[in-house]
Image (cartoon, rainbow, N blue to C red):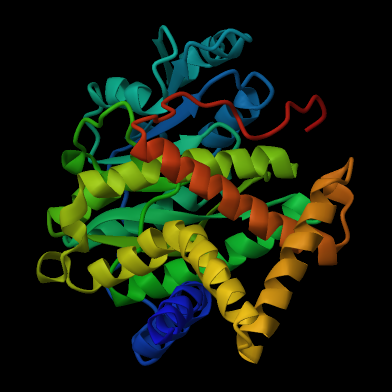
Amino acid sequence: MMFLILVTIACLLIPVYVYFGYPALLWFLTRFRPTVTHRREDQTPNVTLIISCYNEAAVIREKLNNALALDYPRERFNVIAVSDGSDDGTDDIVREFSGQGVTLIRQEGRLGKTMGLNLAMEGVTSEIVVFSDANAMYASDAIRKLVRNFADAEVGYVVGAALYTDSEAGASAKNENLYWRYELAIKSMESRLHSVVGGDGAIYSIRTGLWEPLHPQDINDFVNPLQIIAKGFRGIFDSEARCYEETAGDFDREVARKERIVNRSIRGLMRVGEVMNPRKTGAFAFEVISHKLLRWLIPLFMLLGFAGSLVLAFSGYKVFQLMSFFAVALLGLAFIGSMAPDKNRLPVWLATPFYFVAVNWYAVRGIVKALQGQTQITWESARPRQENR
């Protein structure tokens, strides 16, 4: 019985460590470190902005106008739009900008975002490349803020801050915005300790020479940063390099996106597994295990902890009876939330349990599919198509 108690406690404490202990430990380790732990310098190297598109007719014109209006020397700035077999007129809109220095690269056959980036990178000659999504609108100085960090020769990639513009639009958006603010705080502390874990498809830049062609199953803004860390470089988070985008807009789209991300990311981490060796990557190994690997496995730990708590509860242990009660209450609230016809209008006391349980359930699905060798390489935009932007 003692073995079951220890295993159950360990399984229940791991989620507590990941969500609360890890951020607290990061805070303790970085509290006396300067906000910027590398060299920054205003500079204007040649930059290529690559925008990934699949059926983005609703936003691509706004995105290209935004890109061409950025405060960066035009003679040092190129824009490439990669269309993964779009069939909604996206390509025609991009061609309207050809006279303004925008290049369209069309990939036939829907091979996925990663293969589109491989294709686009074949012709990139600039010193720095910035990756972006079609719906991410950059602040005017975003490129300048990103590239200033590359003045330090040890910096291999820089991640900006993607901020949500519709955080009050509904329960899903509110929960996603709250979670993302929590993530941004962690990114900032990770960057000060060693490196931010992973990139962000909305605003993420690298030294072009560090790019390696990726496998179709790879999620580019996670695997590519890991490869750069494995080469001995750092990854920096710059909270002042900002872009603005919308959340998925509803729970079903958001949790489906989580499943896809976990499905591809856990496979990618295993492919560049050397980054989890502290003898090779130092503190970054601690970061990637705590922030990514353990977080993805949280649903499995919680399931084991819940099962152990039930057994111990029926054996008369009052502490585990209380834990089981709260776990059942959480699942009950999540179930009630799942029955609502419009989940985006749920009150917070139902929305938060439902969001938490749903995201972890879909993470389990992503892990299972990855173990079965199933990886989603194409994607649909998580955002609903909007006619009035």
